[in-house]
Image (cartoon, rainbow, N blue to C red; front, side, top):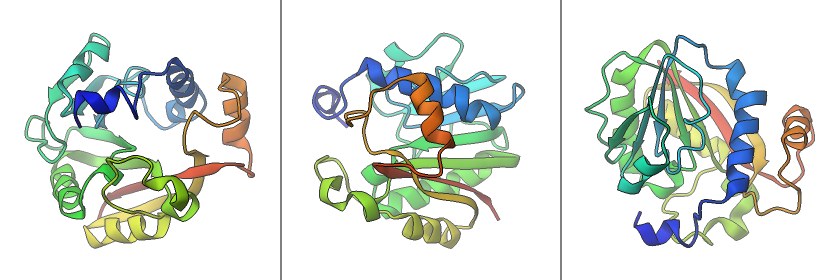
Length: 211
C-alpha cells in the first residue's frame, strides 16, 4: 500500500489506540504468555504489537514508515508478509494478522501460510481478525485496496486446504470500523467482548494451527 492509503482510508486515528489497548487488556493478554514470541503480520501503525507483553515481539509490514510508529524493543522487518525469511524457523508462538488477508490474492495468502508453517513453534498458532463479507458486503469494497472476499466459512475452508487445523471461529467478533455509532471506551469494549450479542459486529476472528 502506498503512503496515500494511510492518509485516506487508514488514517492514524487515536481511537484505534484505545481499541487495541482494550483488546489487549481484556482479550489477547489471556492468550499470550510472557515467555512467548509474537509475530504481527502487516502491523501498520503497530497498534496491536505495541500493546503486547511478551519475551520477543516482531512486526512485519511492507509500508516503510511503519517503523516510526513501533515501540523500541520490537524487531521490525520491512517486507511483504509473503517473505518471512528474516523470521527464525520454529520461533513463533503467536502469529497475528489483523485486516490483512482481504488486501491479498489467494495465491499470496497461500504463500504466506506455507512460510508461516515453518516459523511457528510446536504450539504456535495463527489468529486472524478481518472483515466478514457475509455481514458487510455492502461496505466491503468501500476500501479500494480490498482484493479477495472472505467469510468465516470460506476462510476456514481455505486454511484447511492449505494445511491448517481451524480451532476457533467467531463469525461476529468486532464492528467493522471504529467509525461506528458506539463510543470507543475501554469498559464498553470489555462489555462488548463478553456479550453473546454483538450489534454491528462485522469482523470475524479465526484461530488455526498447522496440521
